[in-house]
Each structure stands twice: as C-alpha cells, then as structure tokens.
Length: 176
Ligand SMILES: *[C@@H]1O[C@H](CO)[C@@H](O)[C@H](O)[C@H]1NC(C)=O
Ligand SMILES: *[C@@H]1O[C@H](CO)[C@@H](O)[C@H](O)[C@H]1NC(C)=O
Image (cartoon, rainbow, N blue to C red):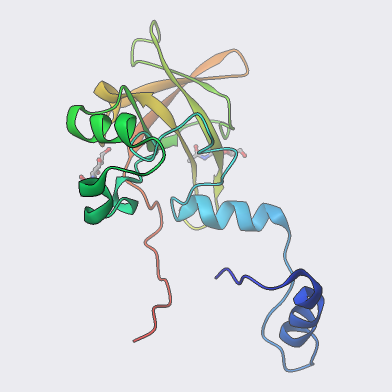
C-alpha cells in the first residue's frame, strides 16, 4: 500500500507502524519496493513514464475518463485523443526474458535481432515468479502478448517475450 502523509508527521507514522514489539510491519529498502511494483506492472514516474510519454503510450488510457474525453480540454488533449483513435506509435508492455536480468535502457530488437524496436524502462528478477521481468516501450506492431523479441544485454542478444501485466496478479485492498 501507499500512504500519503504530511512530511512533519511521517516519522510518527513510521514509529506507530513499526515501533511496538507486536508490530507486523517491518522496514524494507527501495529495492523491494521496486520489485513489488514491477511484479504488479505499476509504473515508476521518471522511469516508465515521464513528460515525454503520453498515457496512451504508457498503456494507461483507462485513467482518462469519459467526461474528459468528451470535454477534450485537459493538457495534451489533442495529441492524446488522436492517439486513442489512431493507436500510438509505441506502447509500454511487459517482458519475460531468459538469461541475466535486463535493466532500464536495455535496447529491444525484433526476433531476428536486426531491427531496433524500443527500449526497456525497468527490469528486475521477480522473486515471486522466479523469472526475470521487465517493462519498456516498443513499436505498436510488437505489443501483442507472446511476441518474441531480443534484448541486447552486455553486448549479447538474449531471448525475451512480450508478456501480460501484472506479472503477479494484484491483490489490492479495496474498501467495501
Ligand atoms: C534470471 O537472472 C538470474 C541472474 O540474476 C539467473 O541466474 C536466472 O537463471 C535468470 N532466470 C531465468 C528464468 O532465466
Ligand atoms: C500470453 O502468451 C503466453 C505465451 O507467451 C501464453 O502462455 C499466455 O497464455 C498468454 N496470455 C494471455 C492472457 O493471452
């Protein structure tokens, strides 16, 4: 879960959650946070989405409600609504790869390894799946689940396949 809290109350909250001997909450590092969110297929702002990506390219079109689409008056509306209609040139998808884990900025090639089709934005070993998972942007023709691609990792081409996200089914708390 993610909790927003006033900066001057953050320490008190952390103490309240972890401080007592009965507490079930433990502190973990940013690496674990990154693994969990990637397994869940969630974007990290600044890595997987930033001011150069649109929600359509980021596979986040669901965040644009019906009223907004109709009113078409939000920042970037002309570009974004056109992409919804005509498909974007590139889109964010997930991958499972063989060999060493592929990280952000890894170059993605087509199956033959001859044509550059995109770049990874994040990647890590998935402790839950025991697979090496990643996400990144590829040309729209390569976004279908099961599409075989190649990653260039340490000057070697390794096999990867486009995979549905979330990699691990999400189990979010939702208030009834
Ligand atoms: C994932 O990467 C690790 C290296 O950290 C490697 O040992 C392992 O074999 C890889 N997993 C798969 C399924 O290829
Ligand atoms: C996605 O493709 C894989 C093969 O790479 C297949 O095993 C899996 O069933 C597919 N999933 C969906 C939801 O189509």
